[in-house]
Length: 97
Image 1 (cartoon, rainbow, N blue to C red):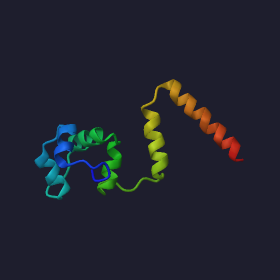
Image 2: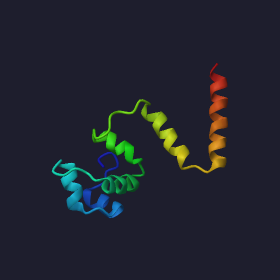
Image 3: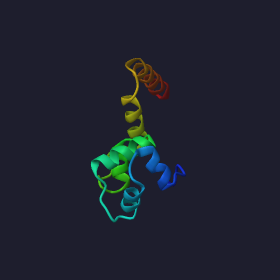
C-alpha cells in the first residue's frame, strides 16, 4: 500500500474489502483469509502468493522476485505473446554467450 500510495479507504474501494478489516489485518489483530488475500492482491495487481510471502505467511520463494514476476506476467499473456517473449528470451540468451 505504501509503495502505491494507497490509503486503506482507497484499497477498500478497489478490493471490495471493508476498511475495518483491512485495518485489523494490517495491525495484526486478525489473520487474513484466502478471500481477503485474493481480493487485495487483485486490487493491487499482484499475485496472491506475493502478498502471502510479504506477510511471512508463506516462506520465501526459491526464485528471485524478477523471475517470479516474469512467470506471473506470462500466465496472463495470450499464447501468441508468450511465444514472442520466449523467442526474445532465447535471443537474449544466445547473445550473452
